[in-house]
Length: 294
Image (cartoon, rainbow, N blue to C red):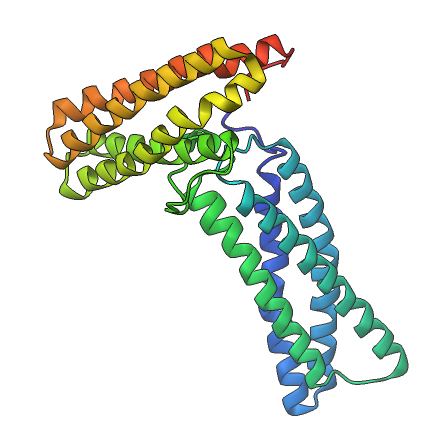
């Protein structure tokens, strides 16, 4: 991978989105002053900013659709992925509707009024919510499309729900998040130095892993049997039991702040996940003709 490539299809969207977001304060300021002072010049500035923003949002949404299709989305992020996409499309539609409405009002000679300011404020709120999901949840927290965060594979847990998983896909997504949280906390301590907070994060992630391992041990074989027969179910049950025991060892080592034991236990957990994927997930994909592991 060339780190100096000028354009990447998956990272073009966060570049273009700043053009859309950057024009919104100008729209609010211009229309606000236009209404307060009944200024034709400020109304004109607001209209120009609105139309420029509406044109830019088309490019932003188009690049977002491309990124949404090309990014390798890890399990556990799907809800936020579709919330961001839906909110982004809805914001673009509202942006365009306001721009068209202003164009029609201008042709009638109608000035920008409080309704225009209110619409701009609503648009600002929608864009802020959409941007928060994209910037805070998907990029900052989850590292989606960020090379240093393994393109989102090392995203820590998004929510700490304790309800049982609905199916194997949800269980694996939550497992990935808890494993990634333990791994990134450990990696940070390795690069810097062990801390009480780091050990606590590893122990917390291990506590999240345990009920998921228990669920895989009891409910997982049933789904595995439907996909690959009794042999695959037996392998799933066996590996899930090993995972549960190794997760317990990881939590105990982290709670006692024993660095060497945490290192060994986390390695054992990762080795268990890798073995399960090789024996169950990737082998199943191969038998069903998948081109590559998901």
